[in-house]
Length: 328
Image 1 (cartoon, rainbow, N blue to C red):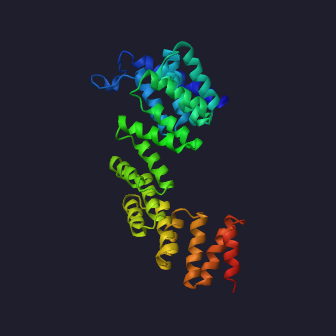
Image 2 (image 1 turned 135 degrees about the horizontal axis):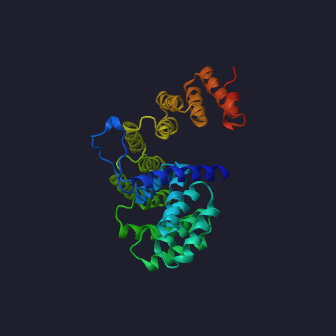
Image 3 (image 1 turned 90 degrees about the vertical axis):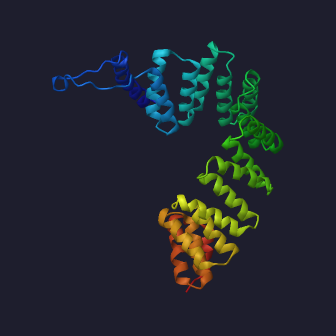
């Protein structure tokens, strides 16, 4: 924490100087550029806050903390600034500080729907589901048009194992926002676990919203795979590989379908080989590549891959058993 504080202080000085210089849109030039008119964008507190949010979303958390420190020093701990700061703390794994930050804001803003929504998220991450439900309900009571408190409520229900309540929450989100991608994914997951064809409906809707979502396509492929629609599963994984050729999970699952369900050992080996060329220590792919060679009768190649697995994971039981099966 000490290092972050020092960095934040340095950033505050530098950013505040830049902020002060740009407040009046003043452009400083030396003699060599005299007479040249340059266009510049004022560096405002709003732009700095937006940059903090952008950096948070892109996991540049120390830099985001530096930016939001400057904003808070200028504006104080407003609802917007407090939520931004708490999100940074959450992603840093500092849930206690995130919660304290929001409580501090709540002292001056005791009835704010956005603040209650942020509190619901903090308690969801802390797995305090009762408090998550409580704050989600408060946020919704203040503003029934909000979708995120209902979504967090649904996630809490899902984690508690209350499938019916979770489905109701995610479905209600979609009534307000028909393109709420995350709710479609959650419903796809729930119905997939039940092997209910409704999973396809929600996952396909998610793909319509984000056509190149590896997540939604992967889940759809898994649904096909687990319900015996092997050709459709392979077609779905192939669709991923068309725009994300290094997506190892699509390669692995394609190999798995060929190996386990279709007994196409050469095709299985090809997919597992591609997966480990991208992720050399992918032990499940290494093992299955060995197993594909074993089933093809190439025991020497099988031993090679089983040994590679055991170099990485000496306790990998299947590889130990595999070595015993293919002893010379």
